Image 1 (cartoon, protein in one colour):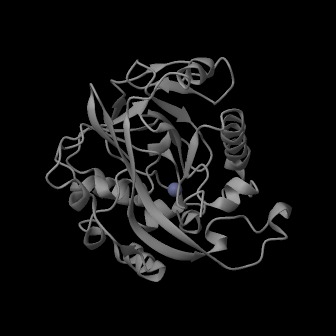
Image 2 (cartoon, helix red, strand yellow; image 1 turned 135 degrees about the horizontal axis):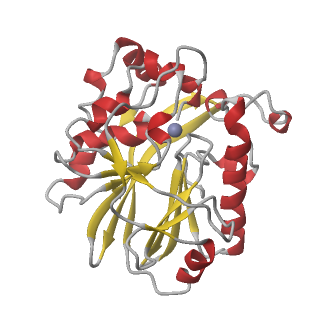
Length: 299
Ligand SMILES: [Zn+2]
């Protein structure tokens, strides 16, 4: 989201000081094993849920200083906060990203509340409302720790395990200081963050690949750049394989035209490599449905 809220500068602080441990789930694997899993029938239930919408100038999403964006007219983008409910026949229910909680906004500091008011974020449903009367998720797999991906974790029962890519908690940024680290608030009561331990993918399909349950049904993909620990997920769903990119690609301009996001200079090469890996993977496997961070791919 609003990467414009996240420009790098001095006086930086980390994304969260919440305690962290190594993930107790998942095994580092390789791209060829992930690709082989696509040929088997999917077993996982998969639902994309829209929680909130906002409208923002394109500068929040693409880098005007980059010559590749020169032909793009100024304008706005409609964005949605998504999360995903996945149901594994043996291991149960999990969430990908946290959705939205009404308990977050009143706890934010004045600057962050003002930024949200300016964005006019319209909540359509909360995580608590979506999950009411159903099995509680056994854990949340985050794409990254920005507030629009972690906020809804507040609606889950205390102690729900939360997984995130290693390095994400340590993203240093001036805005984390100004905004009072919303991830700290969202994660209160949730136990330590469990960090995916990616190892380099020997096949080079992605920077790293983790077989989450050890049965090839759900994969965590290392996609650094938008944030240091940005993680995508590949779900071998009953209705066919689904690729959740997180904000490695947040809007269609980033996918269709590969336009770069506004990011600190030091993160741009990594971000570009992650987008290229995703696009190569999707082109090689056209049966995979792609779910971008904040917009539907088809419209
Ligand atoms: Zn983000």
